[in-house]
Amino acid sequence: LKDQGLIQIKEASDLNTLNDIRVNLTGKKGELTKVLRSMKDLSNEERPKVGQVVNEVRDLFATEIDNKKEQLQQAELEAQMQEEAIDVTLPGKESYLGSHHLINIVRQDIEEFCVSLGYQVITGPEVESDHYNFEMMNIPKNHPARDMQDTFYVDAAHEHLMRSQTSPVQARTLEKHDFSKSPLKMISPGKVYRRDDDDATHSHQFNQLEGLVIDENITMAHLKGTLQAIAQHVFGEDREIRLRPSYFPFTEPSVEVDVTCFACGGKGCSTCKSTGWIEVLGAGMVHPNVLENAGVDSQKYGGFAFGLGLDRFAILKYGVSDIRDFYLNDVRFLEQFRQEA
Ligand code: FA5
Image (cartoon, rainbow, N blue to C red; front, side, top):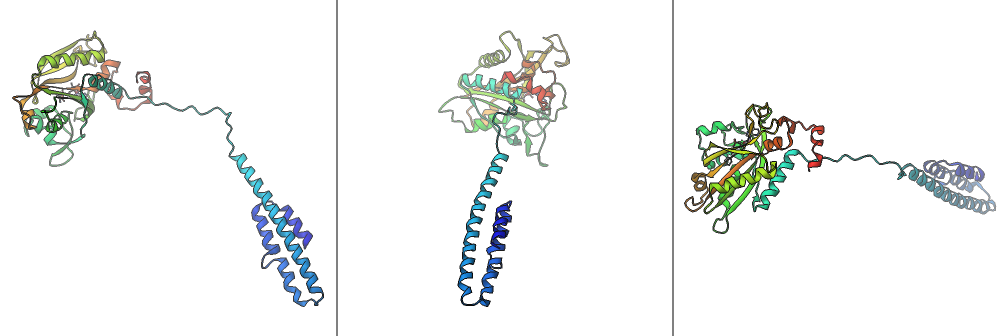
């Protein structure tokens, strides 16, 4: 039994087998226990001798099993380490670096320029109430100007909508601002939504950047100078802009600002619908009703506001031929502008 047991222990190939062998040899129902049990049949002289031998063999098995166990554990550990070894000399996988979206590049550029002029950046909700999107901006229900911005409503009662312009942020800010402490100079960039038919220059979701300056003695000259500075910062000193009289319910007088078409240089093409100009923003002197609606004294304070189309700015600046390219998320399109970020 002793020799057999030692061979079994020596040949055990893994820890489970070794455990089975241990139970088989020295466990309660094991071979040695059987020998111990059978000792009652032995004579008084033989019993201590056999007992001594059994004890010796049991101690020997225990020591050998312990040694073997340590050996197997060590081998297993080594195998595992080998399996999990990392070859640090292998070439790594090339990681993919994303690039900023063109609209964000343009937004950030204008934001930084305006902040350098003393503007603060304020954002507002995209799901807006009719109250702020229209009523506060001097466009009451059934006003014909509502047709200018065909709107996505989110409830049957038409009380909430996807904002059709960033102008509601004007109203929200005017309500809160304390004019006895400081004038207001803010810009507000963000997504807006309209039920426009998508084409090369129109998207049903696009981006605007609102501007608002309210103080005492602000004139149209401040507006013109500001718009010119922004246009020249974005498009370059030589780019032409033109101001056309226009109508917005929240400004009086109102203007629309066009820039020479980038795609054709002013000759006329599909991007500018053959006019040579592309409309990029609306602006004007803030209507007294907008100020009064927000509790601001329109006798004392006044100013200008503008709302520019960030997509149109990006189209012009980078010669993008179709606004829909911004929203297709084709990496090949985005990658072309990696160096601009
Ligand atoms: C407005 O939304 C006014 N809230 C702007 C404003 C603000 C005027 C403050 C006065 C004072 P308008 O609907 O024209 O105006 O849109 C402003 C700009 O958004 C446009 O000049 C154009 O550049 C861009 N835009 C309008 N519709 C779309 C469209 N469907 N897709 C892409 N850009 C558009």
